[in-house]
Image (cartoon, rainbow, N blue to C red; front, side, top):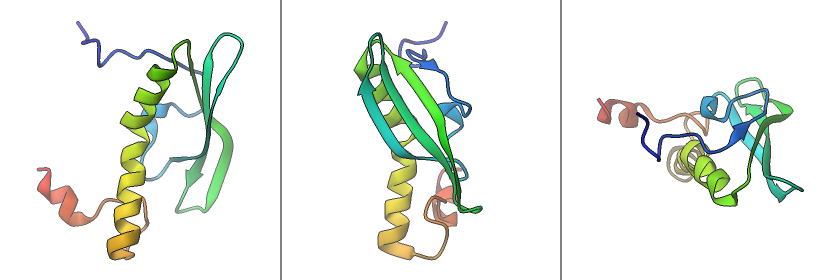
Length: 107
């Protein structure tokens, strides 16, 4: 049985599943708004190596705002933390990619 933390508590209606966000598919231009029935979070999909963004590729909705915030914190925020670290420290690789040192530390 899935734990409550692992259960998806939102509807993913985008062409790009939020769980697939990574250094090659980065949610950008993110918006959270209240609709008639649902809270809606949408974002474009930025592909850094192609310098291209697909408008509105990510779209999730939930009756509870906190479920969307939790999903964004789980899948999107880590990408921005890596990008910020790369910008402030190295500036040697694509902003969204982890450094090789970070990859080897997790093994």
